Length: 293
Image (cartoon, rainbow, N blue to C red):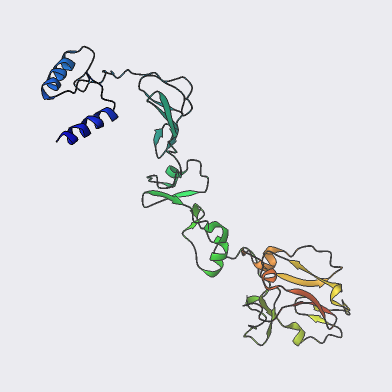
């Protein structure tokens, strides 16, 4: 028993308890609580009362982390979309410093704004959005291939953000008829495939009595126009190409004549790697194996 008493006293001494330290019991704790309730300037929890003091908004928006006093939420700038105006920048005074953020309220507008007409989506018409089922959605960019779609009867609903309008007549005459490739010749035996143009042309050379070379498009030639492939070159339209002598003054084929007003995403001669070659004294298009697929 004496050893246990010494042990407890030793622990108290190790914890820094000195003689005369008062340990509060239940009765003393009740007295202390009553004293705190009566003390001015303190609440029931013992903390100092901190009344909410309204702050003021600076004329210029603060930077995050700048010091502030009181409490305030301040809005700066504005951006309008979907028929509503929103602040661009919001700052709140919290704990003596400003916390700020950009709202990005109109990010992505006018897409998904409510609408009744295309004009509601983009006043003035910028060609990015149009009204579908009461919401602004991106244009489908069909304007790039509207004419091509007209050519094949696949008319998109819109030409960009405008109705796709097709003429009853093609905008201009095509050289030749129907489409063909070097490995898909013309079905009509009286026609031959002008592969550079990708179209069937009347095979005049099969019925013409030419002394020299004959070209389906140019007819009989007075004599050879080339000795080697270096004597030939390609000239292009938007969709096609044609092999001509290097001395030909043209630098481009007429899009209307050779493509009939079609718009192509890429020139099929370039896609298939067509080369100009001299064949039997005639400059012609040389297609690689498997061309025109």
